[in-house]
Image (cartoon, rainbow, N blue to C red; front, side):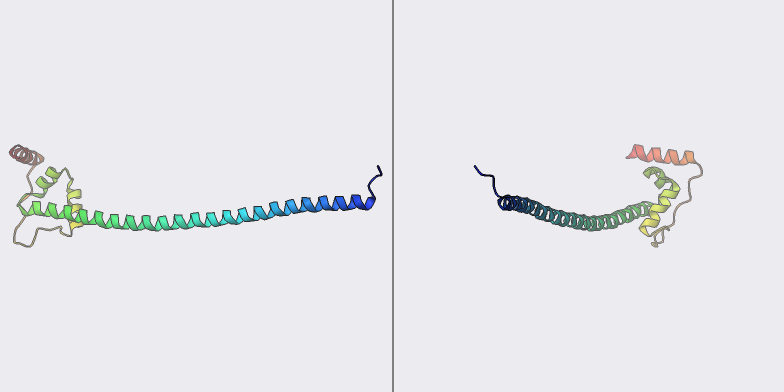
Length: 142
């Protein structure tokens, strides 16, 4: 059989080159599509994170408001205990608070002084032993 002509070989080589170029072009286009999808997903992930952070901030702000309200109520309960005529030292001992913590609780409630109902706070106990005896007596009675 006769050898293929040079022009036939050139045509075949060009066809092969075109086919290879077509494969590369299709692969390149597929890579571009995948890269575009990647960037879309990255943007979506960032948007999800941003929205979640906004929701978390709102939840934390609400929790802080609720915690402040609860602390205010706790301080009000301390004030009510003082309004019964109980001394600050006895109330602090009963609640397991230091005098400074008791003061902060009252300040958190917006009341750091006796109520304006005309009641006065009794004098503080003379010694820590007096407070301990008073708390022990009240604990037994309860």
